[in-house]
Amino acid sequence: MRPCFWICFGIVAYVYAGYPFLLCLGVFSRRRFPPQHSRENIHERFMGGNVTVPYVTVIVAAHNEEAAIETKIESLLASDYPGDRLEILIGSDGSSDRTEETVRRYEGDGVGLISFPMQLGKSAMQNSLVAKASGEVLIFTDADCICDPNALRFIAENFVDPEVGLVTAAPRYTNESENAVTKNESVYLRYESWIREQESARGVLAMASGSLFALRRRLWKPIDRSLGDDFVLPLRVAQAGMRNILERRANTTTRLSQKNTGSMFGLKSRIISKDFSALLTYRSILNPFLYPATGISLLSHKLLRWLVPYFMLGMLLSSAFSNGPLYRVVFWLQFAFYVIALLGFVFRDRSFIFPLSVPTSFCVVNLAALVGIWISLTGRSSGQWTPVREL
Image (cartoon, rainbow, N blue to C red; front, side, top):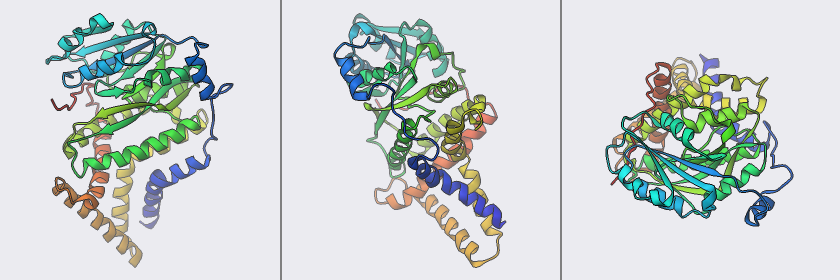
């Protein structure tokens, strides 16, 4: 039991601390920069008209988004990207509210609407929208994501580098309805954003933010409805030998409406189920002989992190059945941690409960990983989604 404990402990410690530390040191891959031109030079060439501005198509898949779609369209129309090089397509995925009515008001401004009477799912909608798109660069963005006016231009500038296949934005999140547990999500997101920035700088990034990211049209292939676009597309780019880039200057703001632990748990389990299925589909990228740096990065950042709850269970059981004072202390520390997590869940709506909410948030995330993997392995993911919005 003792070797089992230390193996499980070592893997959990590596996932949350060891991998970020080694990544920062450049152990897996050294820091890389776009060849020939710095970002500042590319920006100047864009602004000076010395670079052909790519024709881009912005794609928004929406299902019952009447609370967010008008603000979304206004933010896209306020973009400083050249209007004659910009196409906006919005797909209504079986919406039963006023989403389509709102979009139609902007048809005179060049906003296209594709309506489907039955809900097909986000990926299926995106497949249909891309088939109608004219852009050489496809920009995918969520209906509740508000883009800064210069976000599209900063995204497009990166495609001057022929090695870049996908560019993802740097999302920001606000949540006026959060409780003590959901509030900790912002801490996790800052941690996650830092890791992605380090991976991007070293050419091993293989994921994107669904809020806003762009893909070269020639790299597009239809997406299976059970897979998530913000993970499967970066995996394809990496397999094609091209780079995924995190563009910190392209800022977006998403107003979250999850105000209870259940909605956060449901969102995370759904995302993990789709991403786990995508990684299984493209599992060859985990082969260190074919993709040494990217494979290790994905194994560390994604696969092992999703498996953390199994190693946590292994730590608890192995310490419980191991002799010695050290293991007894460790067991009771773990037991106390889970009791605090349970208390944090019970009193999650109390404003003073912040210290207790941290273990609760950690356990909710890992329980979502357990459920998400189960959903993926049992094939229960439908590809459909129902956004949580406040009117």
